[in-house]
Figure 1 (cartoon, rainbow, N blue to C red):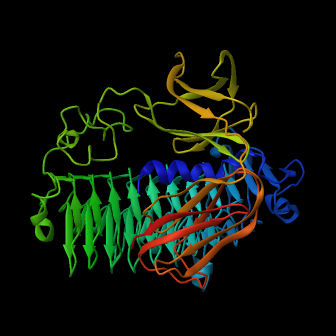
Figure 2 (cartoon, one colour):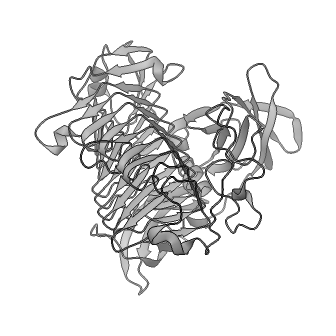
Figure 3 (tube, rainbow, N blue to C red):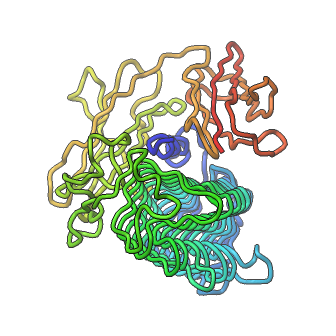
Length: 585
């Protein structure tokens, strides 16, 4: 599983809806307070496909219920311009049974409070997401609280996509997940988010329980706290068969009694890839990570300078560690149950050589050129979540993708900015044969370093190859070319092409994509290794162009499929294609 696939690929799925491409229904725009005096009034009037635009201002509201298929967006310059303040009077918003076309963006949620007699009433101070797959982008969650779980957001059997959001000062001191709680088979995708100064009894920022499998990418967890008599996982807690996956993420200055950064118990299969864990504190065990009867899988990760051991593993299981650096932890590095792994799997114990701590806070975990975590001898290539080099270009391009979604040209990219950088982006397009006839393409900021754009100047079927160039500029500076990519027009064809699945192998979810040359009825089925059809994901009419369908690893009865290799069968009107996918547990 790679960061490129699980983050950029997921954004491409939502680009048509977010940008209002040809695949979206014609929407009515409901303005608050222009057309409706309150957000609640607009919610009551909205229908599927509508867009609610909230003007800059302060809105004192709570106990809202968001309709399905509605875009709910602030139209200020940033999320701090449009503030929804519950003033402690109740939960701000309920998201019940909402699908992936539902969007929340560019808003601040503050002072929401979940209280009551049941777990349902007491959880999710800002948002309670139940049986939903909505998208939340570029929002701020500030000082929300719950008497139960999820100070800001509670996910119950939900798979929201949360991009570029800031969670600060949220509290669930009576339960788990000061910022976000994931329970009952919830598997959110969390990308480019910041978690700071959140508090809970377990999982100061994030709690994963009840077979939940969130994927967290390019996110930071700073100064979160687990408090009280339990106090497991200053930043993250996982147990009861949950399988969180963390990649390219940073954990610093978090604290707990057990697991200053992360605590995993009771067969939780926590996975970390290319993470940086530093300066966390455990009062009892595991300054970086505490594991009890759990086997976290750790690869390409730096665990350094904790107050406590780097990793403490207790019970009948132990972590599996490869290509990682554990060093400078006050109570020991490669000690206890992990001692035998130092000399295998390209593991090391050496000062990672972070850049000067006096530098801007956004770059202090970058690594010097001399860092042992950048050795050419390492099988994984590099360690940690941060790039090599202390004198970096202010903005670097992590990914740049151009695709046809239906007949629309969609571009998506991820950047990493260091040194307090605040770049502006410019995207241009041209035909490869007439580069002098260049045009600009509008850019949408999804938050957290993720961006997307739709080009209305061309459509699939237009002849030839198009060239897109992405530029960035710091305030007062000239444009600098970050990247260039070609997009080739695909002529009409009658059959199925480009069937693939990503991530593959996967856990907990994979996205199956394919391209249809013509609109037609198609069926997407999953077959077990012994040839039994266990699920039909879709059986309907599809438009021409790129299509996608997710599979969450369950059969038609809603039961989790066992690990193994399965066959995806896509049947069109004139052709069938298959693709193998592997489900990991």
